[in-house]
Length: 259
Image (cartoon, rainbow, N blue to C red; front, side, top):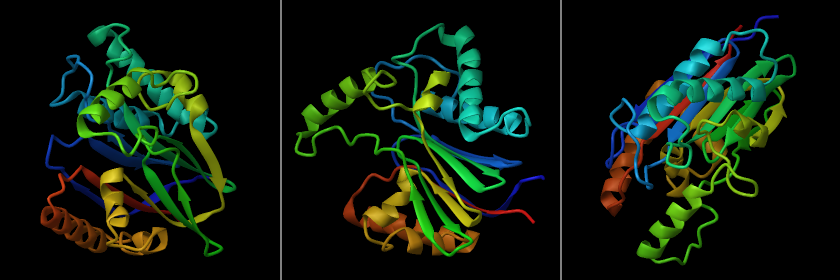
């Protein structure tokens, strides 16, 4: 049996503070969304407008090329193969540097005979309405949830840097970087057959955080078509400008299983 996605909407808005560092795509049974993390540690030199942009684009290309490989069974294997490809591409550029290497949140969804299997690292959000009418929210872990909310701005930056330095180590947050073994630490869930799936970066999910939509069901409804998704993201940008919030990159990818 052949599994493939059909596009419903793909909308990307660049943020205020840097170049576009989100990416998304789909090929065959697989779909993905990637949200590059803002550089906080001393940067390395990668051939792109920013290091997180290089990582997001490299991961997306690796997923697109390898998505149709029938030997890769399961979403963990797909994610691990993409991370291994990033590692191979990075080695001639930066050697074995890992701590200062850019990182990203990622979610990968793979259609199978039971429905859709989803793997996530960090805080991209996937909302799925299955054929039984239920709505499911899938997210691994908010990227900065371990930083105390009461920390002052200056202290928060130092805590964020310290947290970045120990990611992808036992007991810490695992993210998409260059270690294939990160796939072993991904949050993975199997859902039934999807009727509609929307993948969103945290910049797009701000529409929920800021109360422009009430939650996953309304977010799904308001991003199900290109016009609807454009309208919601435009509303989000107007609201952020009104409250003086620096807008992050916002990406929405809405898909349904092909017939």
